[in-house]
Amino acid sequence: MKVFINGKLVSKEEAKISVWDHGFLYGDGVFEGIRVYNNSIFKLDEHLVRLYNSARVIELNIPYSYEELRNHVINTVRVNLEEEKTENAYIRLVVSRGEGDLGLDPRKCKTPSVVIIVDKIQLYPKEFYEKGLKLIISSYRRPSADILSPRIKSLNYLNNILAKIEANNSSAQEAIMLNQNGYVTECTADNIFIVYKGIVKTPPPYVGILEGITRESVIQMCQELNIPCQETILDIKDILTADEIFITGTGAEIVPVRQVNNLTFNIGEITKKLIQHFPNFVKRHSTPVFVKV
Picture 1: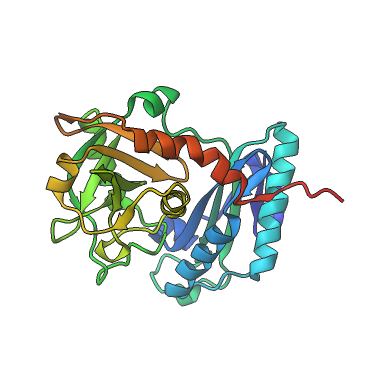
Picture 2: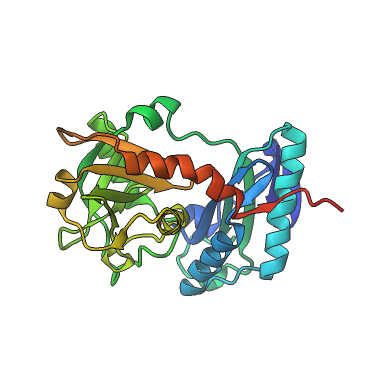
């Protein structure tokens, strides 16, 4: 395995950053998780646009132009696919504030750190895609947008991790997080959808969600399949009275939900249809890694 660190490809064993890096010390940075299917990178440009937008909001200057970073991602993937003899992978692209000192002042960080990791990922065993996940409704709330915008995909995930621990302690795979008004936002690492009377519904960005790339893909697939889809406010009642529930994410893809707290749900036809359509959608929205001359 080769890891890209600040312009160089090094082995996994050599891949190191400084303990004075503000990403490590303070969670000061942004990141993206991206999937590679059949030698092609799924929605690479959408991920990169979100990365640059997140960096801009926190005043973090990525030390590569868009095209330069895009080429570094593609090349790092190509090298690893060839070395590992595989066609599928997961990319973790991280940009931190860089090496500074033990103080908080970001002006001490002269050069941001850029890391590209290409590896495998499997968040859930295959059986969960067939039988569904168990979710709980977390007691931890999503921070409001006037504290820290959830639309920034930052390295600060402590709030989500605490909710994930709560799910683990309840023998659940995920936790639904509410905002300060009691509205449904998302899960700890995934967006959430419900189906009610044939309509697919998901929380809008302004309630406090990260606008997931797979979430966007599901909305686009609903349009292609003529399935009604709405971005609308949801509360606990909407979740507990839904006909179907599923979650989406780059790592998770599309996963049905069979239980929330003590209530059980069926894996419905709309969820199945979206799962079946996803591979075809991926093929049409991916960037080839190996370009034929």
